[in-house]
Image 1 (cartoon, rainbow, N blue to C red):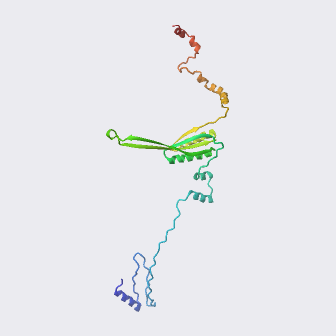
Image 2 (cartoon, rainbow, N blue to C red):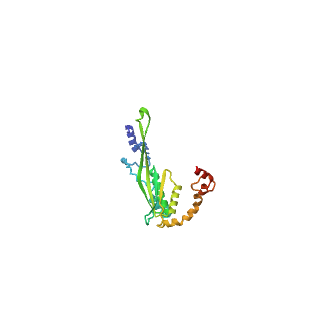
Image 3 (tube, rainbow, N blue to C red):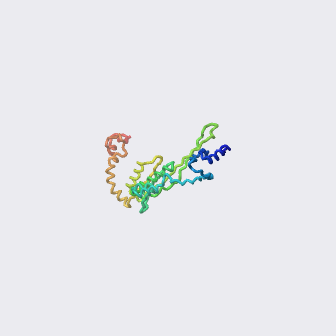
Length: 263
């Protein structure tokens, strides 16, 4: 606070109209406002009462927009100015499917993996590939898990009671093709084998359907089959190292066979 000497100087400054430095009452952290100095030409001004310090209340921060927007918002923003191809838009949506007309099963594809992410990703890939090959598909259907457990002793002799347990869980998904062309199904399976995903195994059961006159068609194809297999059936039951072409009658009429039968 100010001492008595300071107060007397302040009063003398008002009477004599001389510049007297005034100490600022603000805190050191806040910048002090410039203080006006009284001169002889200016009239004395009445001392103003100190204004109460204004307390600044912190305003709540407005929630900022998320840095990453949803895919629907991104596609909507892009759709205003440009148009993405339908195949590109379908990547961010559910896989398209074709409706089966008769519901006749043609192929059952079973996917197996130890990771649920891998098997779900490849199942989605297989369904999308079936749509573009014009194959009606149903699934993926979750099948019961295969749980395998093993117990292995950690040591032997007196420490054989110290054992360790291991567990392996196999996840399975079933994808079924109905009313599909056999050639398209083979192309679909070949495409999946070419682009197989790591950690995912495949097992396919394929059915081929024929007309009711299958016996008649087999009889018609018999001459072609006999012609193709004639060279192989001619030496059926003979040793490969026997290069002598002889029939059973030649063997019966031989002298060697006659000597053995006469004994």
